Length: 479
Image 1 (cartoon, rainbow, N blue to C red):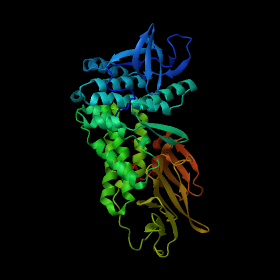
Image 2: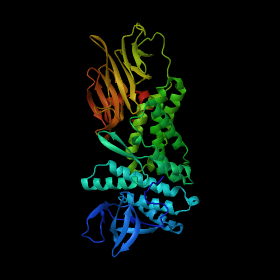
Image 3: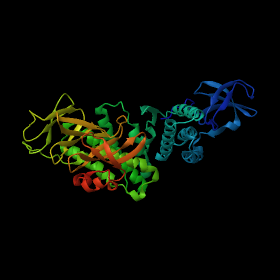
Image 4: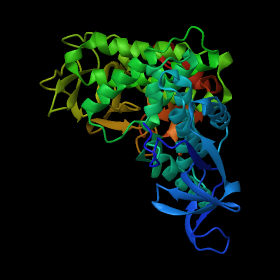
């Protein structure tokens, strides 16, 4: 795993313990600067002169002198392994010293006898690499960003590989997870394996450039990794995190299975039901405050795909009121046809095609048969509401999205018809402008503008009186 450029056969090395240490051309403060060293850099010791060590930096391929107070001389003999491991355990929980901790982990793995390695060292390594990636992905002042970038270069010399993606106009850095894979393969505690599984299955570290085939394979692998973790003796807070992650992964699988007709409806329903079940298993009394955002994230993902769990109803051949039917369009496209007693698929009231999933069981007409809503899911984390309406010029359909941001994380869904035929109820939830938001709304049917809204359904009298019982029994927005 580690590819540090100094020879592994060295008996002693110097590990840089202070950021911005100076490698000089001679053993004096006035000597020219050869390079700037950072925490975790490893140096070969070639001699000692006064207060300086004569060293060789294999990463930069430069020789020079460094003050002895800025490094720690460390033996790589097997009897030094316990001391190194104690330092690794300490630095594992020391934010800002990730490159130093990874440097000591590398030294420990060189010193420890081959058969004595277990998952704990790689658990520490993965924890530090994940924390460094998070820090690098956050907004920082220039000086802090420069130090973080320097530490990234240090750990890269040890074979710690980061992957970068662009999300919402910002670079997202993710550790490639090699250490966590080793935790799962080596003797490790259940809690260490749980941390490894959670690190390997992060939603934000799924590459947006994956093809549908690659994404389907990855999500199946993510589900398998999570299911292999033994949860019986885990703390409740860790169990919650696993359930949250599983809910999001299975919600994505429900969407992807629905895009593969060859898998069949039972496979889609099984994935959708599994996502709902995992969300329902959350022990709210033990939900950590730091996991509140993850809970909202999981609920929105499940909410976007929740129609996958609903059995597909058989539509009558000649519907007595408004209904919809779907047929295949262009490759990958589904065409939605609006029908009534006098209009069939060959002669529909209106046809609209989409590359998203049209959840036919969600189709709900109003009592006057002048409007119908339909849930359509173009992405695994984004579900829209189509509203078919009859006007003076005939039938039309408008798309109501969860928000005005670029499609990311959200859903909007029908929640009931208000008597009179001029209003409908909708629930909306999503991550908009970087914040998780939830609202229950009364919409004007003619314009689809929001007339009233509240953060709880019972705070709106119309919502309280006319919410659809089927919606109330199935939605995850009321939880």
